[in-house]
Length: 343
Image (cartoon, rainbow, N blue to C red; front, side, top):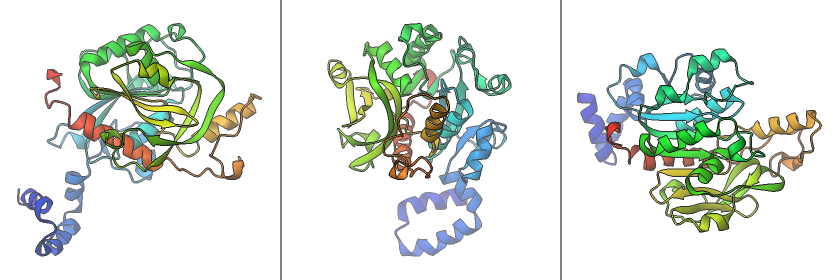
């Protein structure tokens, strides 16, 4: 109790000289407690493969057993992972969701109407729910990933009907939903009828973007120009979004087009790029297609001097961390009612 009282005073009076030395001692001798108060982590399954990767990166991950001892309501975040590389995508998203002083409890979701080919059945059964498992629950936030099905009309995707049920369910059971790449295109099509269009060639690389609303909280702390990876064969167009009164374009790229879109209630966000990508994700996609003999250009603005033998420079990490931290803070944590049943 004494420690918590002192912490409260520190937040108000830290600029007072007489407190500074004292709190250096507090931080030294109570470092573990200090971390638990001020650096709240993501809570994930003890055996999830991402746990080890994140710990190596010195990211604060809390296991279920430890979280049970904390008297705090974490944010409940559901991730619908439609990517074929399940484990890699889990790790990428968990890394970004952890970059916040808010404790986050993550659940993973898969579609029941699609057979997963690139991840073991054991992993999917152990760590993933299906919609029937969660449909009676409430969540503070949800992330819906991209999927490699862009060339197909939405209605021909084998899990489209199930995905539509999930989209509809989010209206009443999720406070804020963040859609990524194809997930963003699918969400815009379902909720607003916004179509997607085939590109003449794949949009592939790391592109410069700028904010169209410098005062929007989702973009708070962003540089004037920030970078985002894209890897897609389809696009949504600015003119189509302009006809939807409930949508606002938040950021744009002269080369990659529309990037971030929000509804006016800030309950749904749509990102056409992949801010969550690792340093080598585009490289692995490039090598994969080259080895298959497919026609693919070197990713734009990615390899130094466009030399695939050189290590890519990661220019989007700061913006990615800021994006997810802003979403969690301003549109999930500060907006969601404490009692999720009141959603």
